[in-house]
Image (cartoon, rainbow, N blue to C red; front, top):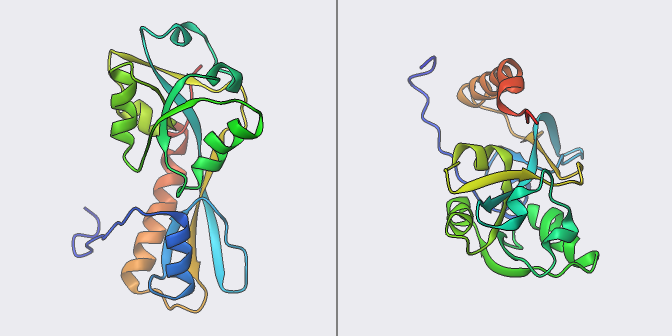
Length: 190
């Protein structure tokens, strides 16, 4: 509302694609989970989210206060696919610990992940803010027992790009808005 003449074009894609586009200067700015610390890029920390589990209320794991990674052994799960950076912090980490869930769905669509949990077809692994914004009476949202299931977000821009007035306005708006609203938006009240 403060900037009615600015039209945002937001595209969601993999981090690999974003980094490649930043390096080739197809885009000048991005929001990603990796602080690209080099002479080509500068970054600002934005906020952190936690990975969480979306579980159908009929699943016995829904009664637990916290879910350990070992609880997921042989359980059907749904989550982001291997093209996304969160795959490493979720599924890859399980395999490295000899935990073998049944992967029912790898997707780019978080709504499908939550839908699988609602239908009791899988335990969904997603980010807390997505789970809480798509909550229904059929599911519960549980944290991982391991508290380092965190995804940090950064604003990244190319040092060799001259940001437009609109890009500068959006960056300032975003940083100010997150600073003012961080406590309300990204806080588990457990």
